[in-house]
Amino acid sequence: MNKEVIIEKINNFLIDEFEVESEDISPEANLKETLDLDSLDFVDLVVSVESNFGVKLEGEDFLNVVLLEDFYNLIENKLL
Amino acid sequence: MKGSIENKTKHALVTGGSRGIGKAVCIQLAKDTEYHILINYNSNKLEALNTLKEVNRVGGIGEILQFNVVNVDEVKKVLDAWNERNKDAIIEVLVNNAGITKDGLFMWMPQNDWQDVINTSLNGFFNVTNHLIQKLLVNRYGRIINMVSVSGLKGTPGQTNYSAAKGAVIAATKALAQEVAKRNITVNAVAPGFIKTDMTSELDEKELKKMIPVNRFGTAEEVAHVVSFLASNKASYITGEIININGGIYS
Image (cartoon, rainbow over all chains, first blue to last red; front, side, top):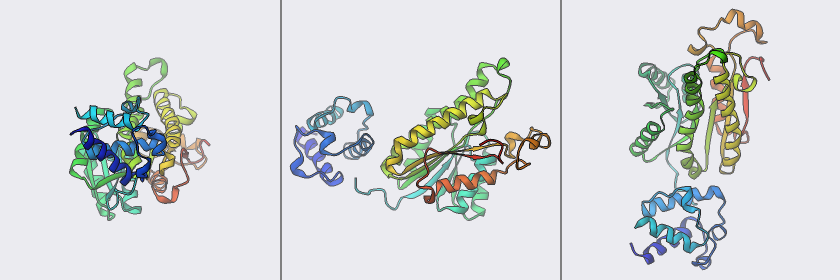
């Protein structure tokens, strides 16, 4: 899966399932703030990633994820 | 996240559900709720089947599920396999009831007796609850009820291991309740005193009941009613609570 497809898939579920406005989505956006996530909400992200990409994220995977771009990269690396 | 979990069959899992209080809880939940009952047992399949028969007799649906709560790999394997077979199902109620006693004076207590009791009550709580909690969080609704004991609150001589294990589960109940409350998951514990079950069959009721204000041992059903209430929607504002069911012996 190439990077564009990954980004598109992620953006789609952010819009569809997390009710994020499409204009708020950019690689530099802060993931937690953009999505208005609290720590428990990450469980929803884990589930969406699992159903869209078939990979299971653990809590520690998010340690270095601040920006949406970090999140794209995380998924890309998981799919390698 | 928008609801993706509608129309799932809802289940209640009772660990150690084949006998004693666990059995009574299975039957009570079958009577009072629409939940399908998952009766967990470790070794006594015959008793688990008996519980299932009772669940069916009162109009409930259920199945038996063998795993040892102590064995984290087994817990995962069995629950994952169950999930695979029941893709449209969710375990919404978890009753952590499995427990054992290995009583003895602390000064003579073998390390194994200490460890075994902690493993079952405390680590068993972790193994099952930790495995199911993510699904409950996604479900945005859940009920976790931990079977503790008056021993975990006041301490019982001859039961330092059991008191320690139950006391630890009480503390975990309060902590976890605060972590997950926002997602409509309540975590409570019930703390029975002397209840007539196999676990207390060797106790001298005639002698001991003198210490109990109600002047008798309790029944498993009296505990099960409280569990059933906590498992219901009616108890939605009660969380992190430990409810005594002990005939007034300690409060």
